[in-house]
Image (cartoon, rainbow, N blue to C red; front, side):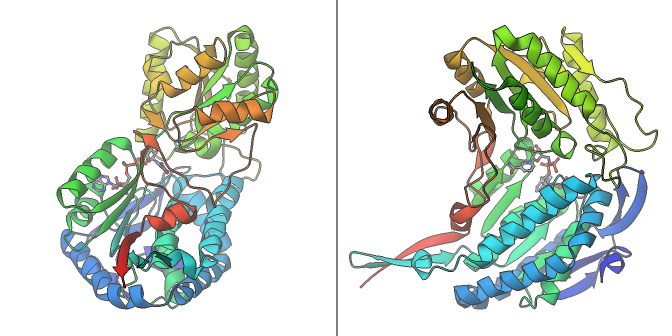
Length: 471
Ligand code: NAP
């Protein structure tokens, strides 16, 4: 088990590990050193994996929901046993700091699995209306394509509802961080999931992912990633009448209204914008503050950014590790440089970063127009843009003037005011006055942030087809 899984390239097809002749090295972004080898599966292997899943579909779909839930509970147990190894692997392949890896990557994923293992209400799977029995049938083979930023969580939010709904899955993790997926499948083996129910085909998006999306026996594609690739996946799915769920990018606004606690709001927004080195889809990366308090907010944000510890992700004191790759760092730097070139004020601490690794300085961007690139585009790095607003209506209009709509925050003097503003935001999730994340609530986007929902019963519904049987 474990390290042996990524010492040579393997895929998992029809209940067995199979050797793959093409491979890719996986690099630790903090050390720039290779840490493992992942398979690079070709379309023939994708075909074998999808066929294995299709062969398992009828029996898994007819397995009682309680038994499917028990399998998820066993998978949860196996992953709990591997908790520290999962943490270490995520630190190594994503560069997430230890605390972030443990809390935001692994423990949340474990909680999601446990939640789905408890959802076996027969009334949800089948109900009566008039002379009809309405049955939620499994949608069929699900292709799960995930990004590198939260490699365990992104898989679990697909795998758990898919398994509970009765869908076998074929997983295509991101090339940059595929090792966690090996651990997940290893746990599924020890949890005795039937052959063909979980299949793993690491590889490139352009070849492996594309083959999966186009495969005629894939009934449903659950894709998490960039809006640009999501659009391509959706158009291919549309041509083939496949169901598709898209969890895409974001540029979420954190709105501070008059009378709200500014210091608390700025601190929480800096934390959100820099979580996982800013590589979080729902991060609050636009901070909208009353114009009268703009300078105060800029100074607080600069102070809070400077207080973050950037460095070795294996040190428990670290808040920010490296970015995932040199390319990602270049992209982030280019966006900040272009903002600077159009007159933005860039506030950054003057600290020494490690010489090796894809580290970057977290920055606050001020004095830009809401229409500038940095205020509109997803950066996917530790960059927070501050914009002034002129009252509640202006703040709502500004927050909604984004093609994205994934997360968001409202900071208000009263919960009633916060709720009233939250209802008017065109975004999938809004936290009022620093409310906690709720994994039973639907998560997903409006507009360019995607279609469909993950988490909760809404996430389970994505993997079902409704059938009405009249008697
Ligand atoms: P990405 O480049 O779109 O890749 C996402 C996944 O799609 C990867 O597994 C990728 O494979 C694969 N892929 C690429 N081209 C494909 C194609 N033509 N057909 C099928 N699959 C293809 O995104 P990323 O850079 O990994 O992740 C960052 C993005 O994900 C950000 O925009 C972020 O906001 C978004 N995200 C959204 C959510 C959400 O819940 N809304 C959550 C996390 C991340 P390769 O690895 O080989 O490229």
